[in-house]
Length: 445
Image 1 (tube, helix red, strand yellow):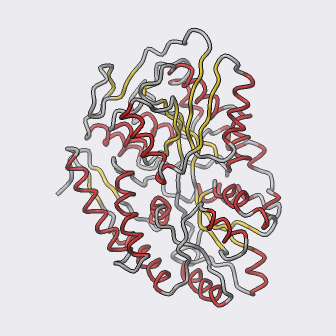
Image 2: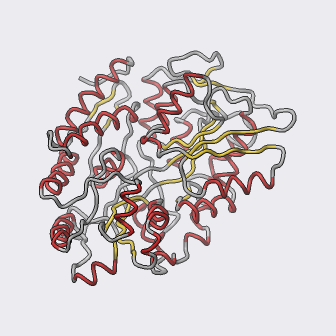
């Protein structure tokens, strides 16, 4: 099952995104979406690289590289998750000519950096173009934009979704673990009577919400090769928004920022009983709620229809070399090693819960073992099934970072009682269309 991860995630549409935004390979360094290319020759003498991301335990993998490569040392910096601040930092650093050599970028946001002329095409670097057959097909299409010979990042991980839940608390309260979203709402009311909450609704993690829409069969973008359609208010998207609006109106979910100290404490003290999240969330819980070791379990996402089998995807990322790097060859070699070597993939899975984007990585022993924190449950088996149950054709738009920001503003207002989640989607759709047009990206009428 761990090999059955065949999501394309709108890779074909990303190719169209490149065409429709005027992006193309080139070596003139022009702005407006032209990626920087390089002959990619090794540097002379010792090399120091800078790398920024947010995966817990990444420093351990970097330390393995540094120990084995004394002449190419990597300095790793940790920032907030991409849409929580690191992407904006990257854009600011690129504008100032001060970007790190390498950065973690999720697949849904990679086109933004391509459009903004922030990436080096490392396809000419030794071993890079030939590495495609090591990765799950859809992830390689994400980083090449379908261009033969061009590579704009190295795939790192994917993010199939399932439900983390406090097995002990459900058993003690005599509440059945929900298998449908209707049952989830019913369980939420019972848990609230116990003085706790079934989960939180995040203000800013709009890509989490997109994963729920993905599971429901919705689309936010479509592309016919000539123009983009924006569909944030599709029926499935509205269904998800109305469901969670009802949970908010009934006081059944907590208004807590995900990944915050407050959120960690709520997980650690049993104030939050579930989290529908991606596979990498296994580490988020174990590191944020250490006192609950052995008390959590993982089950499939609740379904919209009894007996259905559908899942969404949240996240999945790559490692890109930024424009301005003086050592693209060494940066590319590090990115390849980080995302293909058994030792690095094992460290990233054990330290950060990453689910590898390589086909061989899915067979690592670490992914078949039970995890002590989850009562020795082999949780990655659940996520392998989720990956196989995820529609491969969810389409990302060319300006996702801005779309997320626009929708997040509306989500925050809805949580404060000013409008609804559905209003936020409608406003986000209008803002996205405006953004696309302002960048001369064709929009379907």
